[in-house]
Each structure stands twice: as C-alpha cells, then as structure tokens.
Image 1: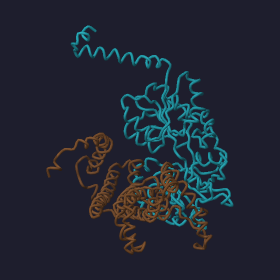
Image 2: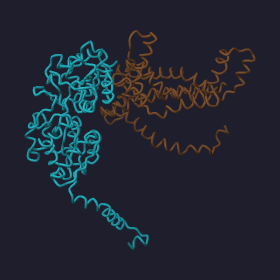
Image 3: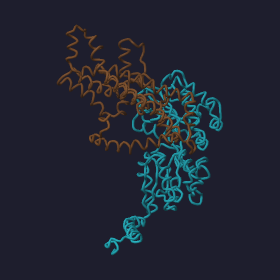
Image 4: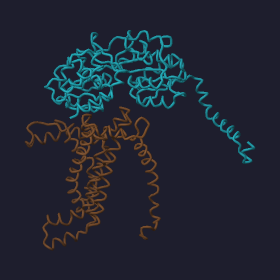
Length: 349
Length: 278
C-alpha cells in the first residue's frame, strides 16, 4: 500500500492489488458454488414446462439449484463456442440439426450407459452420432386441418395434392426444421422408401412441383400460418408440429392434427452434456432423468410430444399402429443447403 | 476557389453524427465488404462471379428492382396529390392530413403487414368490394401475390413520398401560379408548367427514399408473400440467419447496397440539377 501512496507503482504491486480485487468480486460466487448449481441451456419455448415440471422435481431429488436459460438453438451454440474451455452451462437442449454443428465443433461430452443408465430404455434411433446426444421428447409431424373447412380429417398425405384444394394448402419453408419432411413425404408418395427418399430427393422435388397450384403460401413464421388456418383461408398445413398445432387446439382454435396412414415424422428434441461442463456428474444425472420414464410421462402430455422411453405409451390421438418415421439428421446437415437452392428455384411463384 | 477553401466551423456540428455513423455503420459495412470479397480466406472476386453467373440470382435481382419500382410508382401516384392538398390546406384540415400521414408511422411494420393480411384475403375487404361492384366474377386473393406485396408496401412507405414533396411545394411562392393565371394559363397548364417543375426536387427525394426502402425491405415480403418470392434482402437475411452461409449473405448484401446507393446518388445529382435549373 505504501507504494501506491508514494505514487511509485510497480507491476507487482498492481498485480497484487488486482488479485485482491478479483478475489473480493469472486467471493460470492465461491460461496454460491457450495450449494450445487446447474445451468441448462434450451429453447425459450421450453421454459414453462422445464420450470414447472422438471426443475422442482430435479432440485428436490438432487438437492441442488437448476437455472434454465431459454433462447434459440443457434444462440446456445454460440454461447458454447464462445466459452469453450470455460463453460458455465452444463447441459444443452437443442434441435438435432444444431446438435450436429456442436458435435463438429467438439463441444459435447458423449453419453454412456454407465453415466446415463436410462439410455438402455430408449426406442431405437433416439441416440445419435455414437451417443453424442439423445432425444428426450419428439413432437410429431402430421397434417393440421381446419375443422370447419374440412369435412373429414385427411387420411393420407396425398390429400394435400388434391386439385379441389387449389390455393388452400400451406407448407413450411425448407429453412424451418419442420419443413424438411415435406420433401420426404413427396418422395414417399412418389413410391420411394423412407431411406431412399432422404438420400435422393429428386423424385420428391418432382412430386412437390405438383403441389404448387394448391399452395396458399410457404411459411417461415409459424404463427402466421396457423392464423390463416384458424381463420379459414387455409384448409391444411402439412407437415404440422404437434407441439404447436395441438397447443392451439387446446387453446380453443378450430383446428386439429391428423396422423396420415403413410405415417408421421418424429421431430427431434435433443439433450446433451457440454464438454468441460461444471458439475459434470449432476449434468449426466439431469440428462438421465430426462430420458427416464418418470419425467417423460409427465412431459409428454403438456408438450404434445412422443416420449422416447419405451415404457411411456403413445399420446392420445395417435393410434398405436401409426408408423413413426425417424429422420437421418446427419444426412440432412450434409445436403440441406443444396436442397434449399433447388427449392428456391422450383417452388418459386 | 478561395471561398470554398475557407473552413467553416459550423461544419464541426456534424462531427458527432459522423463519428456515430462511422462506429456503428461504417466499420461493420467495411467488414461486410471485405468479407464479400474473401473466398476461403484469400481475397477473390469468385463469390461475385459465382453469384452473377447463376440465372436464379438475376431473377432475384429482377424481383427486387421490379417490386421497388412498382412500390415507388404507386407511392408517387398516391402521394403527389396528397402533398398538393396538404400544401394548399390550412388550419384544421392541414393538421388532420398531417396527423393522418404521420400517425401511422408509429404503428409497427409487423402490425401493418398483419392488417394487410386480413384485408387482402379471399374474404377480405378488397375482394368483397371488387366482387360487389362487379369487377371480379368471384372472390380472389391478393395475399401472397406480387400485387398484394406492392399494395401493402406502398401503404407503409407512402409518408416518405408525401413529406419531401410537401416540404418543397410549401416553399413555392403562390404568386407564381397567380401570375400564370393572370396571363391566361389554364389550371392544367399551370400545374404542368409551374408547380410540377418546381416540385421536382421533392419528387426526386421521395423516389430515393421510397425506392431504397422498398428495395431493402425484409419483414413486409416475409409476411405478405412468403418464402416463394426471394429478393436480395430476404436472401441476405436467410443466408445469415438460417443457412449460416455468410459468404452468400455478404455478397447479396453488397449487391443490394450498390443498387440502392446508385439510385440514391443518381437522384441526388438529378435533384441538384433540377434545383439549380429553377
């Protein structure tokens, strides 16, 4: 201190003063860390059910504090990239296409049956890229329709192509994750197998061109599309996400969601542990609980989604014999930009 | 020359604005320009060559220019008479017209676009009127068509056409028209030979405003026409936000910038010439 007073500042004294100041600032964080704290990143839309269902149950069981940061998948990815080496988030809940990017950047810590025993009880196709992440819930994609404009629920995806619905059909843009199956559906209708139509989308594109007269629009903003459906300007939206369409139905909108005979598609909701996560043990416990039958049975209802744990039955409204197609997201990641290019050219007005 | 060479200290008043723009606009713009000329880390014109050799890019450029021109024309046709009325009006009438023009500016673009969505629907007001007066045989939809986009966008941008024209018209000495009248000029002749030439600088400014805004609009086409109609602005937004293709995004952004800057600079030059001529 006398050095400071004398006005002769050496590098060492400055360093010492700086360290002391840093220690004072850091002190509360050290104290806080004594009660274990887990930061989970996820989608803003997840906030209600995470905070009402997941967090209370988890905090009680593991005697810790969980903080949920709800934003967009790509923002979560950026947070992980920026903090590489000194992560503050431990667990991340993101869409599968973004998970692939996180794997490519080496940001995830793989799940193993030893660390998350519930992995063994998942339906096939729920873990990806050697266990880098797992799907805990899967909203499903069917055809949403207006109950006052359609006499009967659409039984097949082919109904969207029926000439009597000229200008009444809405599909999602290929830039939206839920829009990709539109291409695969078209391929299936053209006679391909699920595996083949994902690898080679040529037949799908050709079939989709036949849908153009029926298109009211191709949406990028989901709420806008449902507005048009609820007001009767549009008759059908397909593929439509259960987590959105059924929530609107539950809120009283005159719409419903049909599961066509060719099958529905599983939308990915992935969960993973971040590499170098603080409280790694707790992080794996969180993921394990999210994959367990107990949590999933509580969440499948309010999120209008399929559970991935075998012990949880299919939700109401989806027959037991409905085929559920899984999407090969690694293949999507590889080809998506080329598909969007072709889509722009061939689906333009 | 000696007059122009002397430094006017009043110019210093522009320093805060210049610094602000340099920081939040100039530097990012340079980064964008730099990025658009990099391919795989090395300086290259390849992104531009690739962009311009793709036929689809020209469709997108064509869409952008066509919509911007149509919106500008519609704004001019609606805006000029309004500006004339506004310049002539006095007292309460003038206040009412001004409020009617300026108040809608406080309503967000998204709200307006959603409102147009209701108006342009098959069972919307436009369709009902057109079938009611017998111009259309059956209800038609303007939503998600180019015509709908032009109508909706013109609604948002029309104040930016009216206000510059109005501010020029207001400055025209009313005695000029009266003088022409005493010399026997008809109202139509007076308009084309006196008022219109004198108001040209305002028209040029309005065109520059509306054209550059219409060429770069992003939210309005997103809501009124959707994914099936790409413009340079929607393509730029999508490249950055969804496809993570910053290369293509910066290329389209620079093309759009050059396009609008060219129009603004040309109209500024034109405005100067016309202003000088009067």
